[in-house]
Every structure is written in C-alpha cells, then in structure tokens.
Amino acid sequence: MKPRWAALAAAVIAGFSLCAAAPASAAPSAKPPVVSCTFTPTPDNPAARPVLRPLPFALTRGTVDVTFHYNYGPVTVRLNRAGAAPCAVANMTSLVLQHFYDRSQCWRLTNSARLGVLQCGDIYEVEKGGPGYKFPDEVTGAETYGRGTVAMGNQGPGTNGSEFFIVHSFAHIPAKYSVLGKVVRGMDVLDRMVADGIIPTDPNGPLDGAPRHPVKIRSVSFGW
Image (tube, rainbow, N blue to C red; front, side, top):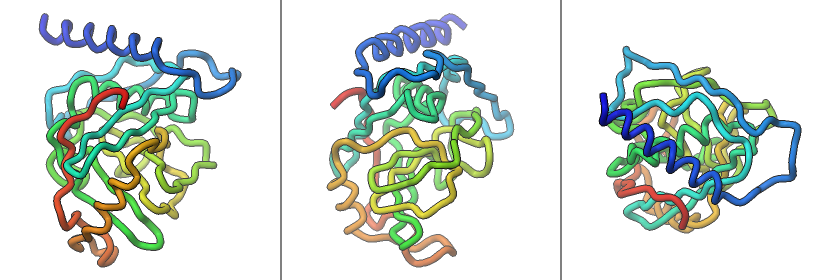
C-alpha cells in the first residue's frame, strides 16, 4: 500500500504546484473555487494501465497547458478549469501526471462534413482501454465544437474516462461532450495527420477510421 499512497501524495503535491502556477483565464464568477467530483470504479472495465483515481474535487480557477508529443510533432492544449468541465480537467491532469497517455496510439480519425476529429486516449483500440473508472458529463447544452476544441469522448451518458478528441475542422454533434479546452499550438500537426489520409474501418463512412499513418503519443508534459 505504501507505494500507492506515495504516488498519490506526489500527484497531489504536483497538482497543487500546477494550480498555483496557472494563470487566470477568466474574470471572477459566482462559481465556487472548488467543486466536488465523483470518479466511480468500473470493475467490469478495469484499468488498461495502473492508475489512481483523481481526488474527489477540482479547482475552478485558471488554466493548465498540456503538450502531447505526437510522432507528428507537439500539440499544446490549454485546459480550462474555469469552464463547464473542471472535473474533466482534473481527470486529464491526473492521467498526465501518472503518464497514462505516454506511449499510446490514437485509433480513430474522421474527416467528414459532420465530424472532423482525432480521437485518442484508448490504450487498446477504439473505445477500449480506459483508466478503470468513469465520471459524469459536465455540459451546459450550449457547447459547440469548433476547430481546435478538446473534449471528452464517451460511450454514453456518464461514461467519461480517458478518451478525448481534438477537433481539426468542425464537429456537428449534440452538446453531450464535456469541453476541456482548446489547442493553442500545433493545429498544423493535426492538419498533417489528416492530409496523410484515413483507412476506413467504420460503417459510418469512408472518412471515418484509423489514421493511414499511425498516430502515436510518445509522451505528455505540462507547459510548452
């Protein structure tokens, strides 16, 4: 048990250090500075990699920059704690701290008029290989998914885990996916992935499937 508690303590300390360093991104609001979160174990869908559940709360102030080092190049996303999905931001921060996404592959790329996204975060294949827990959606119903949006993927209401997607064009989808933030560097990297093409593996159409050239996350770090 000691190593797990040591890892948790390290994650908490690192997380608070990041919180202190993050710049404010929005004017003060009525939202409390901390909100509670519920991360529920999924024993029927165990963790693809050893990982501790995030702590049951999230900060609602400031931003966190996270850089995904793809084999195509770096993509930096700005996670917004002050947005509608602070628990989702805390979850991704926790998974990054624990290196869950390192040495993983993005199994799905789409480029249709309805959906233009890169989907990552699943360790084994599309929608398989999560962190061993789930948490509720955080949506207002007013979400839109324009170019550069980073949002949680799911397999139905309240099934968020490690899966996320980045919009490279536009996603004309219902407001059912928690928005984490936005790409602030590296959209050209996404464009190169799309230009390399798609191997159609989905019945939804020929522009939905695996990237023709494998897209891999070599590592993930905080900052630029």
